[in-house]
Image 1 (cartoon, one colour):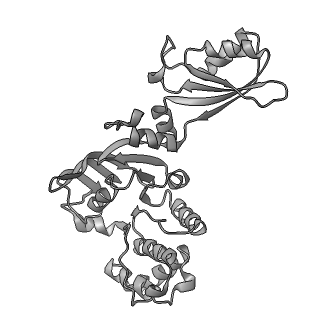
Image 2 (cartoon, rainbow, N blue to C red):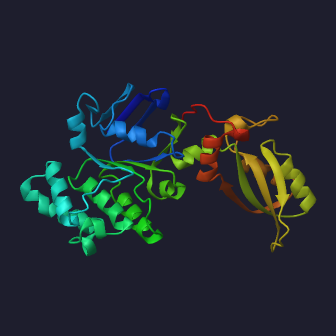
Length: 332
């Protein structure tokens, strides 16, 4: 549905984005994640036809965003980070106006207005002047205007900014409900937003796309160290020696809390095949190796839990890199 290849945008001497490439399948929700100034909004402006790229190609539903801009715009609903609203209009009249602007037929406008007002929770302020509604309702109205023409694709730039927790949950639920029906790019720097809504994640930093994948893929590929909780019955010293003998194990920490029937150890291990060292088998599973070592040592394994690596850990590794150094164009 959306294809981006080698997209670059330069303003004077400033490179806003460079060689950005990714795709979004029909019905998928892609989280576009990155710090402020990373290039998220620039990419979205190019996709929506608001600014041309310096180089590279982007298409929506098979239409080029530059050569066939009008066709692209007919298929996109765009909610910018800063929403321009006509404050002297009422909410419902504004949506009727936007429906007309976006080419919705006269016979369908009122029905579409009523539908999006209901979907976005604007019923209580439908007849009020926009100047008199709250920030939260303004955000909802921005989403409503993006939906008014029932587009195939939604481009949402920070859709929940300025909302209270209850409003955020409602908007997230609404966006998630569109999964499979609409293709969505959701730009945000809020990690919880991505986890709650998106199928896949693209992380952009300093104008370059660093990684693209599902949360699980990113955790697995970028998380060089994860943590296991291991509950074992037996002699604590023997247990520790058995676990430390596994090549993928980085560290072993015994919990000071008492646990009925056994001893709890927190074990940091290599998660990816590229991270194994000291003779570990490429592609081996440290969990399996730990179980084998404990059995060989005559210890009874009661429980093994994978804590893994969080999206926050992945994000910080991509944005900050190891020892504060930036990652350079790591692709998944």
